[in-house]
Image (cartoon, rainbow over all chains, first blue to last red; front, top):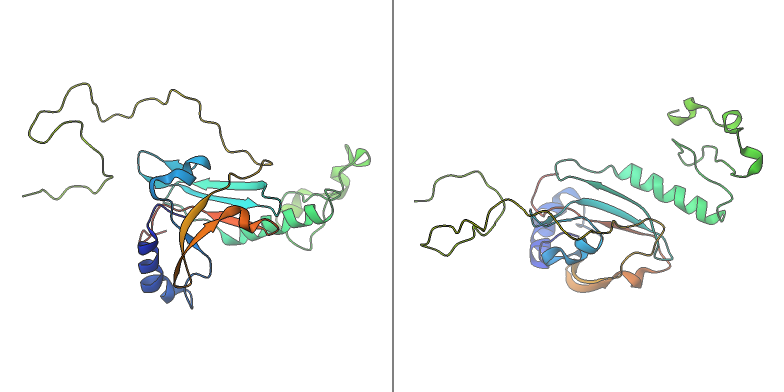
Length: 132
Length: 83
């Protein structure tokens, strides 16, 4: 979603993005002229008249689980967004019985929060697990 | 002839064409008086409806139509910009 009109979205998609992505963008390209929706989400820059680089993960109940906002010059990292979605899906699936520790990737160990784990996280999670 | 100027954002200067700028209306942004509440995680997303371009068509998209699915909503500054 940007403040650009649907016409500009069409031109940008059809003339540039189709050269980057086969078939063009497979998702709706939303138009937020005047930044009204961006304002409600807290990421519209009134002075500049554009949206900041905000990204929101919304679960199937419509609840915002995560968001990340960057100023325009720096791009996102898609792998991180996908990692977060998978983590939230795991938590949702286990109804909160499992949580994902720092550096979690799919397939890596999760934590099972509860009284037994208090003060014993060091036994099940090592700092080296953050990046291996 | 207009000079080659550093490209910036459109902004009214605070005066009528031909008149000197009135001193009260400055370029500096005023401090925001009201407290803006930050968007919260763990709370429902604000619903909205917006026009969109999707697979060759102009459509209308409503966020609540996606209930039951995971949604990634990405905002970005502008088409044809660089990042």
